[in-house]
Amino acid sequence: MNANHDALARTPTSHDPFPRTDNPAAQSAHACCGTEGNAWRDGGTVVIPREDGEMPDRCVICNAPTDFYRQSVTLRVSPSWTVAALLLGPLPYYVLAKMTEKSANVELGLCAKHRSRPSYGRLLKAGGLVMGLGLFVLGAYLQSLPWMVGSLLVALVALGVGSRMTTTVRVASMDNQFVRLRVGEAFLRSIPPRAPTP
Image 1 (cartoon, rainbow, N blue to C red):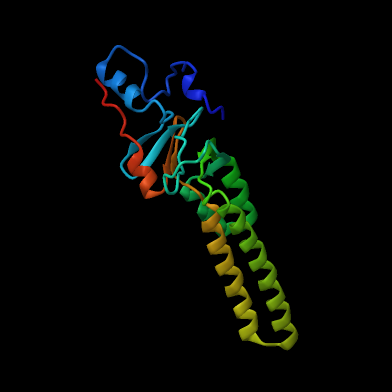
Image 2: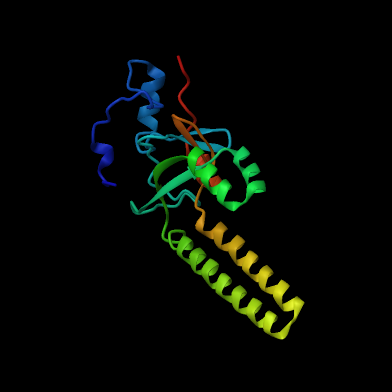
């Protein structure tokens, strides 16, 4: 992302939450939120257009400056009812989820403290799986049920904690036009609400 992107002219689109018009409310929104990209706050979520959505140059977790660092991520979400396909097995669920999922490419600002957290999370998940597998093999060799159960708990805890560390934002909902994200509380409070429709 170009650090001087705010100096570039924006082309109005149907997805622009603050379209450039002669309306004073819209002009006020552009004046106060020029560095906010095209994100706005809606209740407990931050909303951006699904296509060409721009987040502010601040950490989405703690709202600290990012020094223009951005992490490109692909957000994916499937309808909640697809979970029922698990009754048919993992493969039917995977196929159905892939067939019905929506996705959006987003660049997220992260501060120096939080930009390394996803890497630590991935290491924790990998290490937990390796340790869990090793403990399970050892338990099977010793014919010890507690060791085998313990190995599963180690793997599950590592996966849970690691997944939380690798998740910078969560998708609250996604439709054909907008993505609603759950972000850090400090970042959420810093985002202005959408300009009122005249």
